[in-house]
Image 1 (spheres, rainbow, N blue to C red):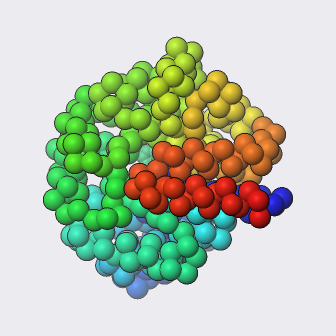
Image 2 (cartoon, rainbow, N blue to C red):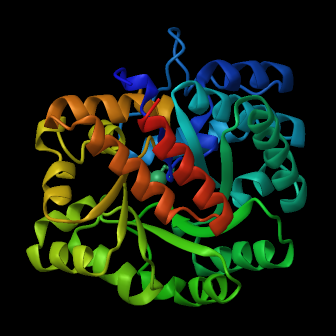
Length: 331
Ligand code: ADE
Ligand code: ZN
């Protein structure tokens, strides 16, 4: 096994609405008479300039998905693409607030998304799970509403709860109750922190949300005690280097802390976040990091192993994925 494409991969951090390609968004927008010209240019690329305008573009792109069939098309397309890049497992963040804004019930939203995941699995073997997220800048009442909806409408493929949105708004303490409810209901939990916020944001997520997985978390590198704590407590970071560069958190990959964090013993995974917005894919993340930092095939397999170990799936599925990973090594 020599090519980058054949490295078995797993993804833990991708926002499904943020994985919609501009061409799919434009096609659905035309069907529904929605004007997406402010966010998609003549060359078929998303238009945004900073985190705030990115979030706005993301909201408008999401608004074209209105029916369960639209959402199943979205997940089927994304999971097929992941599988084509060698992924054997993917978790996607789903956003019940965006579905509600588009006029869809939580249940219809999840059933639509799940149908697409199942279709992709039937054809390619890729396993998928969903993590429902609350949007931080919508406030704690909105985030608690999401967790109640998830708990009240259990679905076998919705196995986690998370917090995304603008990290510069709302202290994690405001969301402690939502996370306690999610954990008590048996959901895996993760929160975005240490992307735009510094080390304090990561510490607050650990303390108030009691998470063992963190979305991004890379700015922990600015505090050596925190780096040691992450390593000691075996916290897993969902690192998204392409996203960080696109959003200006780091200027070039050489200066991204992914390699330093890993060398310091922090467990981490590689992810695409909102791939077409950031001109990336999961495959590109593995390839560019491996090339830039000289990671071997074994290093890359180790990233996938960490993702599977930290995945929000049942242990039977985890064991099967680990067997698939090990057997690919000898193929
Ligand atoms: N929602 C979608 N992408 C996000 C990101 N990179 N950070 C926070 N919230 C998001
Ligand atoms: Zn994210």
